[in-house]
Length: 436
Image (cartoon, rainbow, N blue to C red):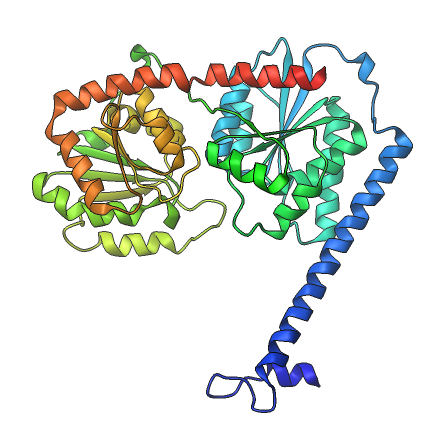
């Protein structure tokens, strides 16, 4: 009866007169705390059961002494779609020494990732779906990972992301596989309950891509986290693809490549457009990408509404996701790449544009500030500063010679700091250290 009184809402929008606000707040906290404690208790009981089994079995699901090279490695991916982290995985898979390591991939979801892995001639399996809040589904996912490890004799489980560790950690403990936890994004503040669970799970080594990501997780975990520098593919000039058909007409052409989420800063670029169009009335802007992982699906409609009216109408194009070949052509032949993300742990597309000798204008979020040398390979502007973004774009488009020099300097910088082959060599060193 008390619950019914609490949930009844007064027509004015307030609480019923008989219920004091303090009672409502206390009930809300108590009910949510109980729900959370039950959820955590279930997971803790499951974890203790796994620990017991591991102790009884000696923590080994196969005879590691019989293992020979190449060493089987399983990359456990949290999704089946392709985001920045999955691009990193694909690059690592391409460059790992196959004589030393035999990589395979397991995706906790279905999507384009499996096709790209198979194009590399590697094995990839997909779990139909997973939902961390559903215990039965979660246990099925753990068992699926466990079977994958045993089936392929995996010795190193490379786990990408936070939720994925909740499946990979118990599976690794049951089978004796060493667990490498690879983090790409900093935890929210305050950390989510999933982050808190992951913090308590066993793993053998933790690496993080991006300085802020490493520092944030070190603070949360209370243990050292190794910085793992990312890298991108370096293409030779003779492999530059033909110019895309989109660039056949008027120009100049500015490209932005990112999934459609607000923190990526699309609206900052749109706010900068009127000032840029005053100087370059034939400017064409290409916003490449779409919604990913089912997040902020309504954001595309908001952008399209702005593009339907002058001065943006006919000047900004929103084609969605494009093929890998088309993406390479757009990046390699644009006049500049813009990346106005408000928050960005790294920013692969920034380094990829520089690898094609393209100048960059980016917001000075953590990742781009590490990649772009301000005034030398492009310009950095404060996050959310549409006027500064417009000024940087105008400077580059107004001086083709300087733009070319910036592009060449960017290529040299990427060769030194962000070569994917160096990234793969470092990962091989980490694997070797884990194997002892």
